Image 1 (cartoon, rainbow, N blue to C red):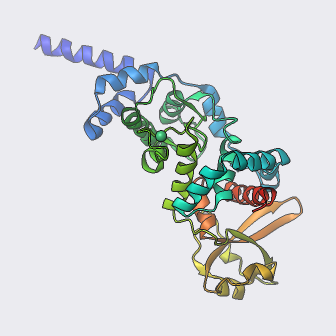
Image 2: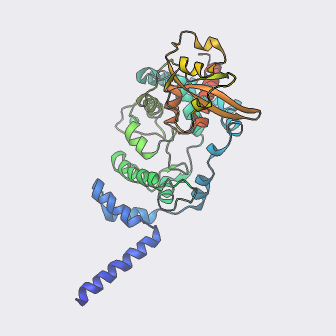
Image 3: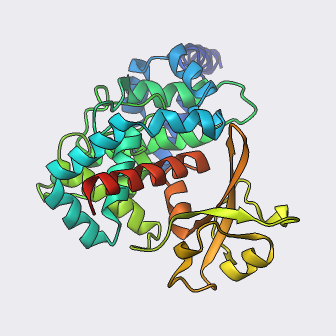
Length: 331
Ligand SMILES: [Ca+2]
C-alpha cells in the first residue's frame, strides 16, 4: 500500500514538473505516441528543448491582415517587389515555365506568392519552428480567437515531417507562425503538397529552386487553380445593389456573373468579360480604400489563393503583384 502511494506521488511530482515546462506537453506527447506511433519519451525530450518566445505571442497578436487594405497594400505592392519578381522569373524562367505547364498554373502567380511570402527568399523567417509551434500550441494568447488547436496539430505534423524528410527539428527556422521555406509552407502543407521536382529524393523548400517552385505550383493546382481564367475584376456597383452578395469570411465563387449583375455588381471594364460566359461563378469582395470601400468580382482562382492564406487582402496583394510582375516581364 505504502509502495503504491509513493509511486503515485513520484508520478504526480514528475507530471507537475514537466507541466510547468510547457503546460499540456505531456498530454501532447502521449497523443503523439498513441495516434502516430512516435516515441513519447523522445517527444518530451524535444519539447524540453523548445523555448517559449514572448516575441511570437506578440507577433500573432497583431497580424498584418488586421489592417485595412489601403495600409496592407503598400507593404506588398512596391516597385522593389515588382522588380524583384521580374528578376526572379528571369533567373528561373525554365523552372517557372516547367512548373506552370506541369501543374496547370499561371506562372506569374507562382512568382507573386514567393514574392509576398518571403521576398523571393530574402526573408524566410528567423524563428526556430520548434519554438514557434510550441509557443503557439501551449501559450496561445487570449485574442478572442483561440488557434492553439490548429498550432498543436501543426506541431504534430512538424514532428512527423521531421522523420519523413530527415529534417533537423531543433534547427529548422521559419516565420513566427512556423511557416517554412521560400513558399512558407506550414508542416501539414509541407507533408501534403510539397514536391521533389529535382528528384533527389528529398523535398527541400529552402534551397532547391525546383522543389520550391514546383511545390507552390502544386499547392495551387491541388486547390483547383484554373489556368488562364480570371482572378478578380474591379466591379461597378449599381444604385441599390444587394449588399448581401458581398462575401464576408468565405470567398468561394458560388454565383453566376449574370446573377451578380442582376444584384448590382458587374465588371467595371466590360472588356474584361469578353469571352467569359455569364454563367461563370464569382463572388463579391469589398476592400477598404482611403476614399471608401471598393468592390471586386472575385473568381475561383481568387478563392484558391485564399487557401494559401485566408485573408482577402492577401489574395488581392498576390493578384495585383502577379499582374504587375507579368507586365514587367512582358508576358
Ligand atoms: Ca528535391
